Length: 562
Image (cartoon, rainbow, N blue to C red; front, side):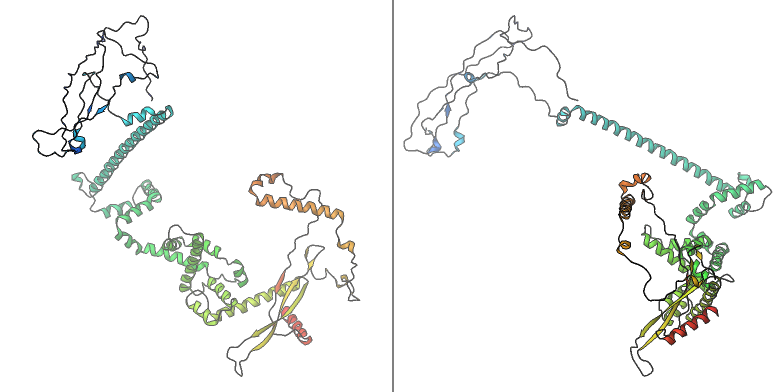
């Protein structure tokens, strides 16, 4: 903190009334008069005019006059602005005539500064010089600190002392904990050593540690003790096994070769086979509907957790991108499906889906067979067989739909141009035509359900006697009315506000106060309806002609009704 000036009585001046000098002050000015300097006539050497033989410069200083005072006095304080010119001596340099040394034949070379003569000291001894205080920059800096800086510095020093005290306490606590842990370890080691010691030496008398552990896992007379041991291993068994395997790599290698571990992996492999094998009576349509990579992944995680964990730990790289993790799960699913394909050829649900995808993507037969040999797909012939089975299942569904509901048939031709790279007599560029058809279930607008046979009679259709459209169109029916424009404006404003509430975070708090529909607007919602449609078998027929249309119709009737 800044040092405060100590209080005291001010010093008195000589010109004050009733001034009395202090008896402890004893000062007396002592004047020592220097003897007069003898004057000599300068000897002029005309032959030598060198400036090196200049006589020393003398300063003729008038002798100062001092008033002898015998009474001790206090130093006089002068008012500001007082000059002391009458105390300053005046110096007037006087140059003398050059003088030739008597014993010197030639002028002696000397520096011009060497000829200067120091003036004599005419003052008395004066007051003794006092020692200067030692410079303390740190103390000066601390003296210049403000009160806020001093408080901050003291708080920092206190906090530093607290931190150091806390650190020392933590070190001491850690030392005591380590010492306690070492004592417990030594105690456990002593018990370990006493297990195989004889009873005469104070031990338990077991022949070996293996005999001791066999006794722990054996069957004894106390059911309570066995239950305690079981609960202990249920809670800490994994931790104990981990510490054992960390201590001994040989024990871990032998554990991987033991029948228990191999039986666990075999059971999980069997669970994957059952998961990817067709159940009796399963249809391909049901298999296609239920197949998803996410569902297979979830089932694999639950049925084979050990195998899935092994695959995950093998390919784990720490922090990975989300895309890499998703791709990893798909790869693991594929690996598990390939493993089951090796064990059982019928566990090919995954491979069948991949084969159908390859066929639909235009893959060649040889490419599909290569994927089949790698365990990723089934053979090309197997894919064709499943396509025929799928077609029969769909035809059965179509026949059932035709029997239950009223249906419509629509078809159109497809023109395909085949280009041959090396044309020959029996292999040329050709143009083929085909026809595709779709079965559409008729919807009953009165009931909102699919129309059953007989619900919609043909008499309900208007009779067409002309090709003109029987609808009267006028400008009034096309242009909106004034009321419709007002309603449209309200709906558009409501839609803009709804978009702002949905996409602007600063407006989210206004959602509870916003109406769910435009105010003062009466609207009739259009009922949602999904039209059911079923694809029919493709036909190698050209329906662009009249005969082609008849052939297509006859074939559809035979296909649909059998």
